[in-house]
Image 1: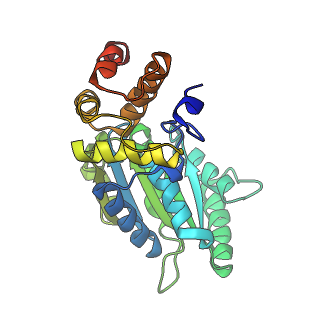
Image 2: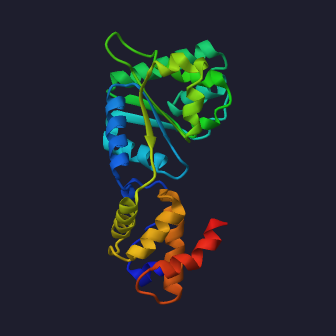
Image 3: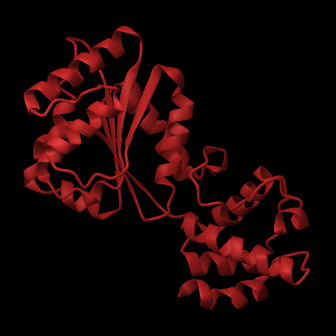
Length: 266
């Protein structure tokens, strides 16, 4: 449809976390570099940000950057109790028959983590949407995962990702032992106006198009309406492309953005 009209090879504003489309704003670039360092040290990192700021895409880019020496295990639904969390972790680490008892589970995880170390591989446990964790003991188990270590190094890394309220949760005195083990707290901010323009052009080019399709007044309007949040920008840009295609427009200006804003804001 609009892909052929604008000369795209693929959709430029898909909502899937494809690292090829990761636009490295100054904040995203700094977050990626810091996360890479923390995982090389096999420690715990906490990454927070508003919904749609690019946390998940950043984790996929981190996985690609670190390469085959790291094995990423994603826990995307953390609404688990402590035993369920450990059993899920065990399955992700390829434990064929996770035990029912906690002690046995920990022994199974310890065994596979040490075997990974012997093969030159560092497991990385990524807990997404961590603000949804309802059982405080899950955070205790996350902390205790870093007990899998040798005299001179940890044997796995952990990335805890979530929305801003996660920061308030972890500030509780209840989680002081966990906070002492966290090597990085990083909060992703939305894009600035200039970064919003660069973001739009970047994704257009990755998809096979040309920059400048969105006029400066359109970018200004998009920024005002989305607050610089990439996922919101994607939604607005996609709808703008559809309207432009339907009206045979060569450029997307603020008139088109105004035409779609009420529908999207609902």
